[in-house]
Structures are given as C-alpha cells and as structure tokens.
Length: 105
Image 1 (cartoon, one colour):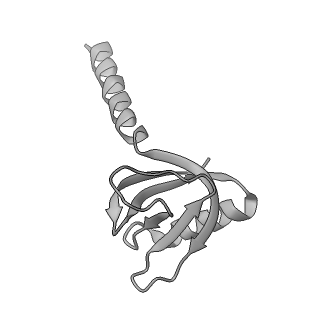
Image 2 (cartoon, rainbow, N blue to C red):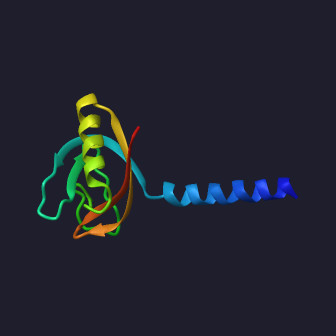
C-alpha cells in the first residue's frame, strides 16, 4: 500500500512539473527597467521568445505583487554575473508576457 502511495505521489509530481515546463523559458538578461509607477519590472533577454497569447515579444513583465524587489535583485545579479535565468510565464500584462517565477540557471 505504501509503495502504491509513493508511486501515485511521484506520478502526480511529474505531471505538475510537466505543466510548468510548458511555460518555462530561459535567456541571458539584456535590459532591466524598474521603477514603473505600479512597481512592476520590465526585462528582456538576448534570446527573443514569442509567446503565442501575448502580442509583444519585446520583453517580459514581473508584476509588483510577485515579489518584484527580490526578482529585481536576482535579475541584476544575473546580468552582472552574465548568467542565464529561467522564468515561467502565465498570461499577459497588457501586451507583454507576465512572469510568475524567476531563477538562476
């Protein structure tokens, strides 16, 4: 019984990972703009990725309600260290893809 529960847990975790992987992108940070009136952050990467549901491929937006201060620190660190970042996108903010997670690659 315990092995069955572990097997089901592994299966569910792999399905959840697959769902997030579909919206995961990576790139080298090229430009960061912070200090928008709403507290959001705009950034773009050297590698341009067009997301189907948003009309602009010029960059990505991190809303202020998604720990924007921590994301800004991470993006600045990645740019200075010339490291790639990965980021998950969910929907759009205006015409730009909305970033919900960012991490160092």
